[in-house]
Length: 200
Image (cartoon, rainbow, N blue to C red; front, top):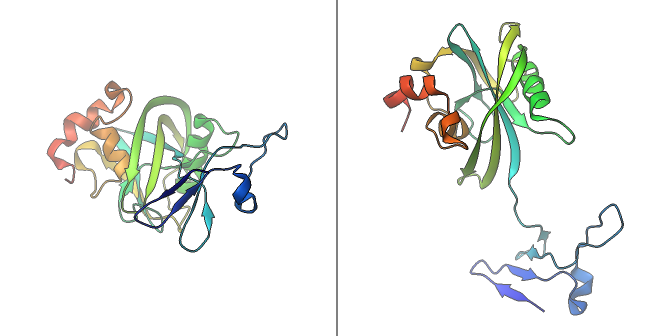
């Protein structure tokens, strides 16, 4: 048996240990094979949780007349900060489909010609969340922005790159400051024009 006790009194138990069989968590694949050997963490309250894994998000840059579409986040991590439309990538969904859907759901704006721009690796330490964000950009087709998802946003509008509202959402900041893959795919207009206007 493999047992590791941390300073939080959490215990890592190896799946498949015959002496702890009653506590094992098994996950079957489509062929019915058990996922044996993957550890889970048992905390002080004897509740079992799987190891933390990053989530996949999609952000979409929408520009019109040299301005970028931003919304103010609400009731979600990063509440009070400004970012582009975006959200979780759903099962079976492509990043392009997610970008179009999120722009419509959050702002009522229709976009098209969606292309990949970059990827950011975003760690929100305070809320213990980790996202890999796929950044897309789309062409504005129709619609004026409104707050369509009032439970997730409190304001929305078009902003000049050299007059972005503050504070900016961590994932968006990482993109603008070139902390992305590949770095050359950060928005050059934003990086050159925003500069010291970014809220440090």
